[in-house]
Length: 249
Image 1 (tube, helix red, strand yellow):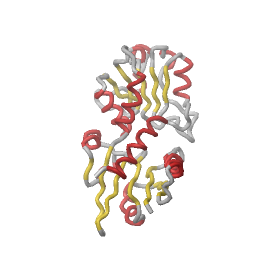
Image 2 (spheres, helix red, strand yellow):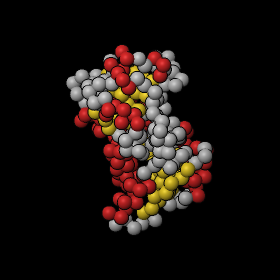
Image 3 (tube, one colour):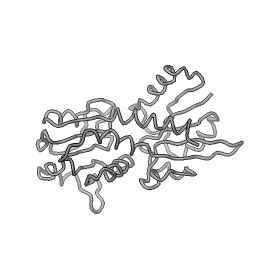
Image 4 (cartoon, one colour):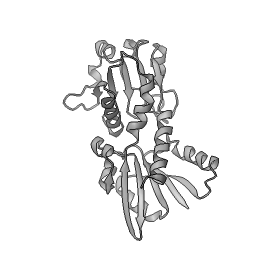
């Protein structure tokens, strides 16, 4: 039996288990299972790996993408530079465990954003400053897009939500929600930005995929903006994780 799973807290929003169980059925992988592992603290990870002796791969979601790094024996260069990992590969040799860490959020976001970009999409606002935001920023750099980070507790060179006025929104035609705001079950919430400044020239990308249309995206679409949720990104990074777990050496 090969076991895979996801760690995070909460996991009620996650569709990873549904995605992989469907994959196992379609590909007749009867020796595979995928489980949700809600951890109250990242310090529970070693016990989980020790207890689940067939566990070969783990997806990592909020709030552990950054703190999981301390348990990784070998992070890939992208995870190291970003400071966050969302895929773990568990290698076992007798009683020894060796954990590799990868960041597939970055390439999955980059590859799903790029086809939507227009010539004027040269500046972006990134809402949030956590592990997902770091992957987004890395991807924007790779695409040559200037960016500003918006945070509830802004660090130097970051913006607060109170600083987002009409001019700021107008000068940043790409807006990316890299926070869990609006995610199931708190679907009535949305980032507090001046939506009346959004136009048909804007692109709004929400990393949240449950629900598929957040209020953030709905408000953008009402203003004529292009919108995209995080479902394609989820699927892309899930397949990248599967490749890492089974075909990377």
